[in-house]
Image (cartoon, rainbow, N blue to C red; front, side, top):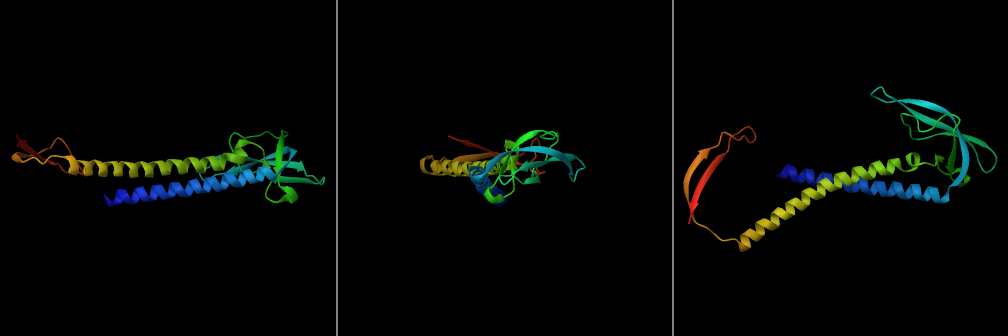
Length: 181
């Protein structure tokens, strides 16, 4: 019982922390979008990124001209397979005023995917922990209601049997048969 309570707390706290992180990331992205300057950019290269399992994803390298006329390049922080863009493709780039913050490609993948993944994981963990909490509270309420409204019954033990058809934790439970009138 104690282990389940610990799991319930860990899942609930992990979920809450991930949801807070998703909220922070979402607000940060929205703040960036609100203050960003949009310009046209061109994908100049697809840089391969090797993962630990040996698979390869591709990160676009983008060139754009900022408000001062200077040509700048950056690598996207996101990579994918198949590549999200093709070399030579024209895309919209968002960059911060006076170049505060890294420029980003204006697409759902590059702006919101991290927030979405963290938020979904947070919702999943929090739902599991919360569901366990609600189940425990419901069981407690049912037991309290039974104690308050239930009727005490005197019963006589008829027999005690070893049930070998069922195994719980590698052991066979006993079945106690009662009779009451």
